[in-house]
Image (cartoon, rainbow, N blue to C red; front, side, top):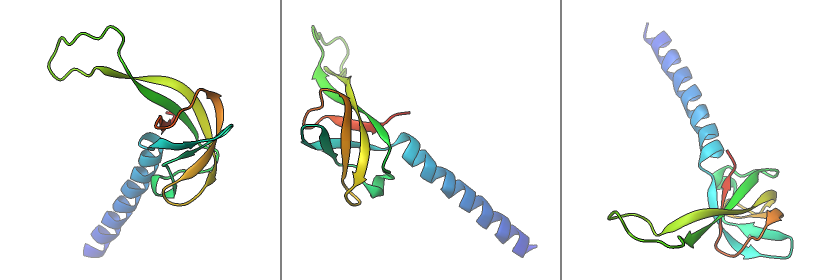
Length: 116
C-alpha cells in the first residue's frame, strides 16, 4: 500500500517538476542587453534561464509615455515598446549569451524576452 503511494507520489512530483521547467523556459525567460555590436548583442540570459541556441526573443524598450498625465496613484509613466528581435547563437555561460539581431534598433539596456 505505502509502496504504491510512494511510487505514485514520486511519479506525480517528477511530472509536475518537468512541467515547471518547460513553463519557466516558455514564459519567464527575460534579460537585459548588456553589449551591442554591429549585428550581434550580448544578453544577460544564459543556461540558468533555460536559454538555447535558436531561441528567438522579442526586444522591448521602456519609454516615457507621450502626453502622460497622472490620473491614478501608482499609474506608470512608462510603457514597453517593441523595438526588434534577436536569435540566440551562442550560450556563453549560465548568465550570458550572444545573439544575432534579426531586425530593429536594439540599444544597450533594452530588455529581451522569449517570444510566446
